[in-house]
Amino acid sequence: SYELTQPPSVSVSPGQTARITCSGDALPKQYAYWYQQKPGQAPVLVIYKDSERPSGIPERFSGSSSGTTVTLTISGVQAEDEADYYCQSADSSGNWVFGGGTKLTVL
Amino acid sequence: EVQLVESGGGLVQPGGSLRLSCAASGFTFSSYWMHWVRQAPGKGLVWVSRINSDGSSTSYADSVKGRFTISRDNAKNTLYLQMNSLRAEDTAVYYCASVVPAAIVWGQGTLVTVSS
Image 1 (tube, each protein chain N blue to C red):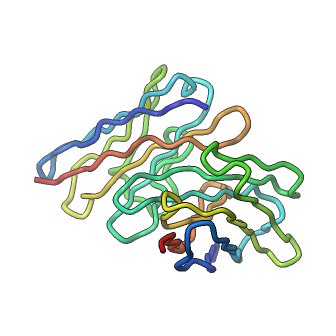
Image 2 (cartoon, rainbow over the protein chains, first blue to last red):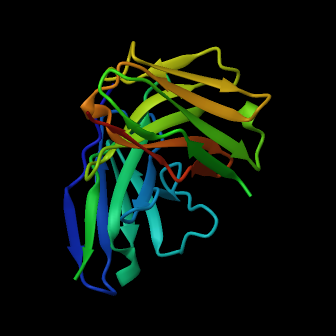
């Protein structure tokens, strides 16, 4: 299996733009997914297939891909966006791989 | 409404066994692959196992291979995880999850604590 690498933490002020990256050798060949997880809660999908937004997710959440790096962008960050964010992909056998997670702090 | 509900967690001694269940509703369970993911206290998400739609293909993380068995009963819309030879490091919240059209659905998780 392969690894996905995320920064441990990102900090932004309310209203600014937060960017969380995820790097992995297989990302050019496999889709990436992004989850938001708040304390004591199950993960919630915020981006699927690199850049698609599930129903009910605010438009300020977006995803992009470039080579071996995918990026989750949160525009106009709000206090409620403070959470842990995980990227996830899959290997050629369909086994999932997760990044280590990024703690987003809204200052 | 698409929903997954886990059950079966609890306190078990090292070396013991436990079977987790995941009841699915609101979608055609038999059409989709299913996964188990765990999260140790204060740690990140870790993939544990997956099973294909008809149960003919399974895969495991190295850390649980030979000790855990994933299975499903499509007639009962239920996913299982049989966990044997449990260790302290298996202590975690266990989630079931499935990729459905335009979404990935997760259950609320069930806590497994391995301790004497």
